[in-house]
Image 1 (cartoon, rainbow, N blue to C red):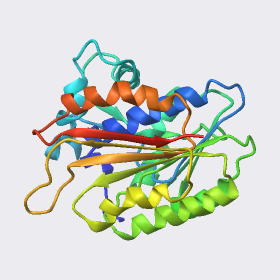
Image 2: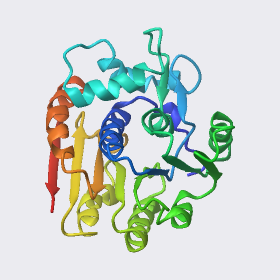
Image 3: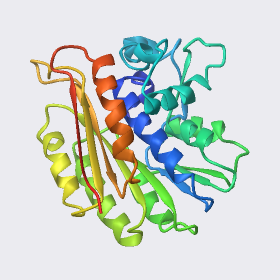
Amino acid sequence: MLSYRHAFHAGNHADVLKHTVLVQLLRYLTQKEKALWFVDTHAGAAAYALDEGYATKNAEFESGIGRLWAQDGLPAPVAEYLEQVRSLNPDGALRRYPGSPQLAQQLLRRQDRLRLFELHSTESGLLQQYFRGDAPRVMVQAGDGFAGLQSVLPPPSRRALVLIDPSYEDKGDYRQVLAALRDAHKRFADGVYAVWYPQVQRRESRQFPEQLKQLQRKDWLHVSLTVKKPAADGYGLHGSGMFVLNPPWLLPQALRLALPYLARALAQDAAAGFDLECELK
């Protein structure tokens, strides 16, 4: 929805899961020399201040990235994610949090390309200003990312990672994600598609993972991280999930290392836990 601002939620437990997975995907996919396209359909503002403005209202980062910030002995995938966040905070104090476009910029190479879409006029303006002067490597388009996805697939290099993570404040987003993935798969079946979704007490959210699994019988991965029991009033986010089509074959192994730690570190009550399932070729 056009009222949604991710800055309120930057660095929370859902961002930790999403970006832990994203860092692993980018690390694996940049091991081949051939150029990679990163497409972000709901890019946000690229980076967020945690010590001022929207993020301080509920301070959701304190129960997310804040719990990991000073920890040592982390599992390698979590440490690799934390390294990327720390690169945006060189003095050692947690003041800024990278959104997906910033993480991609840090991990992608000169030959790679970023194609970023954002519908919210304020966020898209911030995104365009943030990456001003970076064309043609980075292109920002103010507009609907679902429609924009059609314009960039298949990419010239025939290699792409697509991140789809709308707010889902509008329950129609679930249908739009499924439709966008079906269309994208027809255009470019070999792409890697990563979908984030919220765990909320809404029928669409509960049904979503099974609907995603129907997109293709093999070569998918689904992971979810629950941090607390659902609220009695039915509102709020109690966890989130990531679904990946055509995942790199080492991704399940990395997440089996990361998820037990994240479930313990980010737990808010005894209902915390995780699930990981995959069907690979």
